[in-house]
Image 1: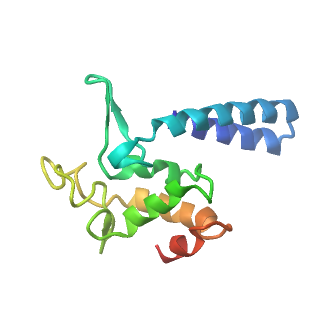
Image 2: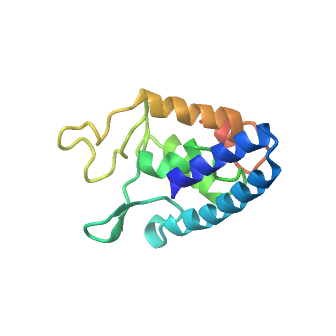
Length: 155
């Protein structure tokens, strides 16, 4: 859903630039539908307001605090006034979770899998993801009015 939404938003931007009004409307409608689907992908309960991955083999949501949860923020598809923005900013600013002296970890320091296995997916900082996150914060969440403007600027 997230990938389709990002592609749809990109196509909508191109249609605007090229002044294809009917395409803009169609892409906007598709994006709104996908946003609804994305909202249903957010977990409820203990992990409320975070995006989880889906394990097709076990047919259930798998929720680990890490990069997967940050993609709606990284891609800038959450509205500035979404409470999910605040939740994600709190997660990335907490040193017991994703924040580290080197940047944002790929997996939370308190996760059961943190630093286990080959460690590629379970802890190191990925500079490209950090760069994309900073870009999104700079261009949208730390610039546009919203309840988390100051927190986005601090992060």
